[in-house]
Image 1 (tube, rainbow, N blue to C red):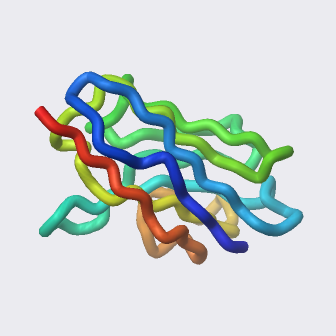
Image 2: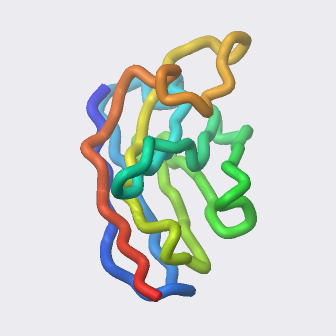
Image 3: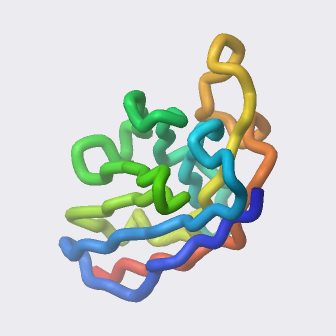
Length: 126
């Protein structure tokens, strides 16, 4: 599967952005999807994940209550709605796809994902 992330930009603290990640292929619903981010000088970190059906979601504590992940399997797209953005949310955001079995996966570690998008930059000014 190939992933194409979009929707990043420069916003002010408190603003909203919605990231999209479009996937190629015909079996999108088989993939668990995740969003990660990497701030300048820092390691890549988990943001959120969603199951193939969309019924299970999980968030990092740092974004819980502000971000919402969703997916539209008919459109082969996963979204990350980001509200109440903070300067510390500034990072390159990556979407990723995983075919690992649920029984052995947490989907919060980058090594659990085999496919990655190119990243989209989100800059939040104070």
